[in-house]
Image (tube, rainbow, N blue to C red; front, side, top):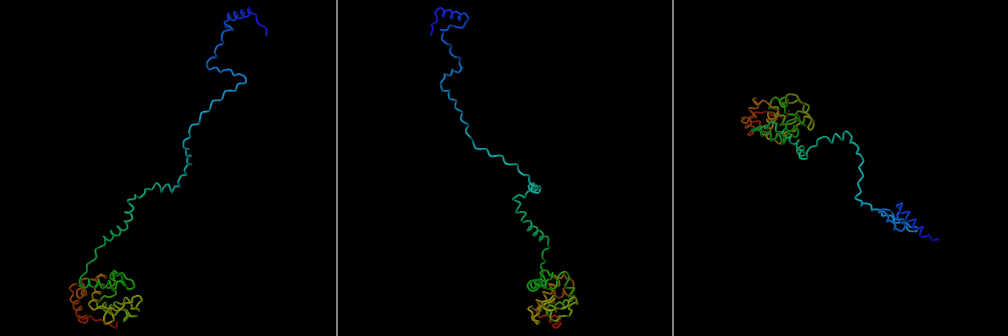
Length: 258
């Protein structure tokens, strides 16, 4: 290598100083802050900065529900309808009972019967109501209520004879007013015998009492008639005579043979 003469080096430094370039012998200026350092050949490249860790994961959000299908019109109308409160359910359930009790309350009170009609009412309930109805409305036997008795028997003596002997003497023949024809026992219009001499189980006094009840308790007969006043009124004289001595003592004819 050729050595540069000293005087040339000095001239070069002076020239550089005049130009403001600094002296070659001055120390090299420090690199500016933030300037990247020169990479030397063969040196390993700097390691890349480590990536920031991902943020911690929270609970996974539920997917949004699909849009709801609108209700049919009849379902929507049912949902809009006002519901019965729970406390009103027993009230509604008791309405039929209350209606029944209210209707019963509007009915006139049962008439308290005394004398022959009161006795006849008890006998009728146990012996006659199964065929003629509790209120005389009819059934297997003919109806008695609503004036039906007077239409069949206009005289109490004819009524007593028919109940005493029953249907047997009148088979195929009219009886009473002729409205009905006697039939075989067990057929429509049949009637068993109730009087003692005809094989029945009622005394004359009991039979008169039940006939009085049928005529004036169920049938609505005239309470001013002579038959009522003589035989069926609470103080009827002939009722006491029949109870003591039977129909013969009260001169009431019984047609045992029709």
